Length: 270
Length: 343
Image 1 (cartoon, one colour):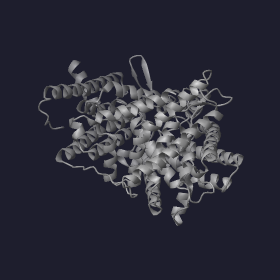
Image 2 (cartoon, rainbow over the protein chains, first blue to last red):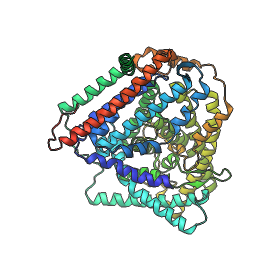
Image 3 (cartoon, rainbow over the protein chains, first blue to last red):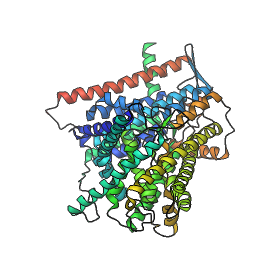
Image 4 (cartoon, helix red, strand yellow):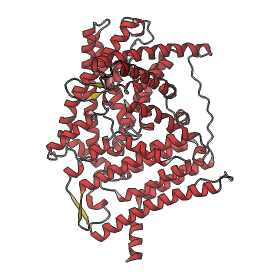
């Protein structure tokens, strides 16, 4: 049940960095959301064999880490924890695609290895961009941006409520798991039948909690409408943020900066 | 079973995003037409429940592997299609943002695969007709198993289709499909049984909390709206569940890929659909990808050119990291002087 524990604690930690007063923290959440989307589209738009020309895009996550005071170690650790779906699918490419592409000294590069490397690089870039969006913005601010960008209110309220009760429910599950472990020291995991009962027990407590939360909301004057109060101010710096980064992504997409830099350096040496 | 950003092309991602957005807006509208202020905290807490419930790993008999609840079908039974779909959207969004499960670009695909199919297809079309108003235990279990199997099969098929249309993986369509569908059949059975066990447990303890036969229950599924609303809302209940079948042991999807490895396989002829989308992609300029010839995009075929490319990549990355350190150093130095511009 280790995944669960890391689940609870990592949700808490990722959000914490956002409160810091940093240049990135002051940027409007909408600007960061739009730039993240532009970045993801830029990453995904590269061809399947393109590896090296993707590298300059790493400037964006690196700049965000530096400007947002995000601890890069915990970010890297999180990348490693991520579900290995992309890695597993990508790992087939070297086995299946033998298109010759070139040689590095004695090493022959096939299309399979190139596309595998490309998938890995895309994975690192897009995953770190998503994590950095939350780490530098905070979940509440991301939700405020979503609401202002036209996402249905019900969905935004749902995201906020769910995030708020995540930790409560994770603790509930931890207590239930501990109770199971104390009563079944010889088993590492419950059987399917027992799991159904455990989950039913947790579900029962969840439903009762929802009733209590609702009563508490009524006591505080809840009338069926959740009011989101968060002022967002779009400044010139936000426009500049979106514009400069989008221009950079377009530049990387349209010009092979890596090759240009590589040719320049090998020309200077040789 | 989450689709990943690294495997999806912009065109496929955009289509899935569009489809998921439309369903989200329609679901939100349906809930608005049928206001119930108890639903706000209920949906929020159940979303957190689905998250937390995935921490409970259990042994799957006869396989030596372990699994956990997905949650989509359970949500649909408790909340009805539109609300269940929106809860799945929130669960998948938080997973994408905090854990990078799937990623933001592939979120549209994941919402569709894990949210739409269980909520709007498996629940209304399979679970409800089979379970009826006051199902017995065995009938409830049967309906839950069949509904989660249907939801998962559709979801797994969608993953294969999306991966193939994106063109980044070399995995042959047929092999991928043959591995994904059977493993998700097994996952569906397990998911259905555990869902039924949890629902039966709650129904026995607090019949008032489970919708069956309780028209007044806040949880009761009420068909809302007419025309399009009917189709959508009736469909949404059962799905998001399927994919989180991971724990210490390989996930269903990883397992099937693991086995595909031993079969090798020949690349099947490109399907007409795929060539259509490839053509579309290459015509859309910057959005084109996955279909380029190798020689166009690899830096150079000559050894010298390749080395230059590699050196350039190292240099670029080094430069980017240097800029990062530079920003940090400058900010530390100027920490007393906070008004620095960003770009």
